[in-house]
Structures are given as structure tokens and as C-alpha cells.
Amino acid sequence: GKARGEILNRIAAEVDRRKDDIARAITLENGKPLAQSHGEIAMTIDHLQWFAQEARRGYGRIIPNQAEGKRHLVIKTPIGMVGTIGPWNFPLVLGIRKVAPALAAGCTTILKPASATPVCNVLFAECVHAAGMPAGVFQLIAGAAAEISAEFMENPLCRKVSFTGSTEVGRRLIAAAAQTIKPLSLELGGCAPLIVFDDCDLEQAVEATLIAKFRNTGQSCIAANRIYVQNGVYSRYLDLLTAKVKALKVGNGLEPGMDIGPMINEQAVTGAERHVQDAVARSARLLCGGTRVSGLPGTFFSPAVLADVPDTACCFQEETFAPIAPVSPFETETDAIRRANATCYGLSAYAFTRDLDRAFRLMESLE
Image 1 (spheres, rainbow, N blue to C red):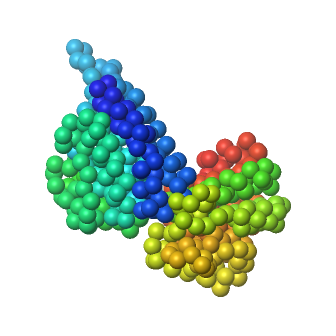
Image 2: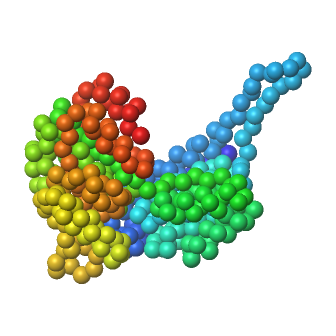
Image 3: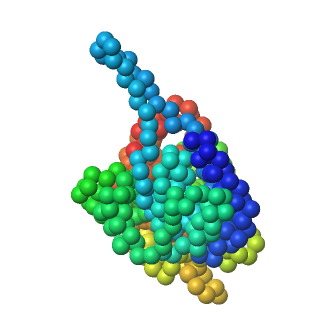
């Protein structure tokens, strides 16, 4: 474990040495502003360093014996080759979040990056090679997702699969894993509620909303998807949020000072337009943004704030992978919890309150 940790630390050092090139590759492939790409690299380095330390801590257990003359000793061993499938929205860190613990545990690993964002992962593979990883321990393969994932699922040499991506693909992987009883680790879609109570620090809540909603151009599985604000601060919250959103800079991620980059493809823009139009048709008020950005070629979408959004709107029922902040008022804590839990998703949730009792109730009640 110590030796594996030393290799992971050397990989982290190589990633840090090449961070400018890798960050540029992330922005060119994904579109996110360059500062956010550098943030993703910092998280990647942190994961590598963290699991470098964890590599030596695969502790076992000694269990009290149930019969005289016997001892029960549990040791942890590597599961075997791990197939890892990364997403395009955080194309480096979410792949390495799978690779680093697998390598730390002593598993050989194959990384399949998203087809839209392979280059930053190829640069990472170069870092692995430069760090002196033994041949064949880490491999990278880019290509058709269906073909590669099918090989992971069907080949008995692959002992576990870790995937981050859509719920639809996750269902297919679960069905395929049932044929060979293969262990899966899945991070799928989200529809995160963000709940703002009238006793909170409102300016802090607005600033946190900007990060939770608009980081990575809103294309995050833990992005705030449904914003519920208590009646007592509803109007003021909308005013503060709308002013902040209007000030966000939209443009080429390689240019300095950008907050919002292009969306990943044309289909993503069309989906964003559909969610805005549907909400407005259901009586929501569009306070800013919500359209393609004129004068910028490509898939740029102006960040939007929607007020008075009904629970039946598509943006409250589906995962909105876009820079759209839909807001709705609520009266009581019970009402907020009920509405927050009215979804098939359960990946994350956010809440803002100064009431410690309420904070614990929310932790125990939000699903």
C-alpha cells in the first residue's frame, strides 16, 4: 500500500506540473471557464493525494471467536480489474475519483472517458506513464460507449464497474450486471432541492445559490435544480439573485473573467429552451435570460431566473442540465420538505437556516 501511494503521489505531481495544458484541454472540450477547469484539476490532485494516504490503510478486523480454539481474521484484498466510466461534465475529476481508489486498493483499472471529452484524460494517462506506473496497471480506452461498457459487463476478467452518468444508462448497466452478478458503483441523475428559510443569512444563501446552480454552466448532477424560498424573504431573494445572475459574464471559457461558458452541444440548448418555455406556459415569470446569446456563435445560453414556478413544470420534474434557476415560494417547513422529496431522484440537497434544530430535522427528513 505504501508503494502504491508513492506512485499516486507522483501522478499528482505530474498533473500539477502539467496543469495549464490539462486545464486548457478541459475548457476546449467541455466549454467551462478556464478558472473552473483549474479548480477541477485542484480537486483531481487532492483525490490522488488523499487516496495515496488511504492506500496504506486497508485495515482488516479480528472478530471474537464463537468456538473454542478458533480465531476469525478478516483481511481486505483487491477485488480485481475495475472498469471505470467517466462523464463529460467534470471530465477529469470524476474519472479520477474512481481510478484513484481502485489503484490505491491494488486493482488494475481501465478508464473509459466520455466521447465528448477524451483529450484531458489522455493527458492524464501521460502523467500516469511519466510517474512510472507498471505497464498494464492503468489503461485508457476511448470509443463507442455501448461497445466498451458491454465488454466491461460481460467479460469475467472485469470484476467491478464504476459509472457516473445518466439514470437511463445506469438502468441498462444494472440490467447487464444482473447477468453476471457484477458489483456496481453508480452516480446517476439529480434534481437537487435548494431550500431557503426566512431566518437565514440571505446574501450568503444567494451567493451559495450561484455556485450550486451555475457552476459548470449548470451542467452538474448536484446542481440546485428546484429552489424553494420561504414567503418572508421570497421577493428580496428574487431581487438579489436576479441582479447577481444578470451580472454573470457569458463567453469563451478561455477568455479571462468568464462565469458561464457554452453548453456541451446543440441538444443541450434545445432542452434548456424547452424547460424555460414550458415553465412560462405554466404561469412562471421569466426575470432574466433564458434564450440563446445573440452575437456569440455556438451553444451559448443566457443564465435564467424563473419565479413562481409550479411543481408541475418540467424544470421541477426533470433534471435541468442548464443555467436555469427556477424559484418557488413556500410557507412552512413541512411544506418545503414534502415538495423537496416529491421526486424520484435523491442525489443531493441544500438548505439555508440559522435554526440548528431545523437543520437536524432537515438532515433526517430530506431524502
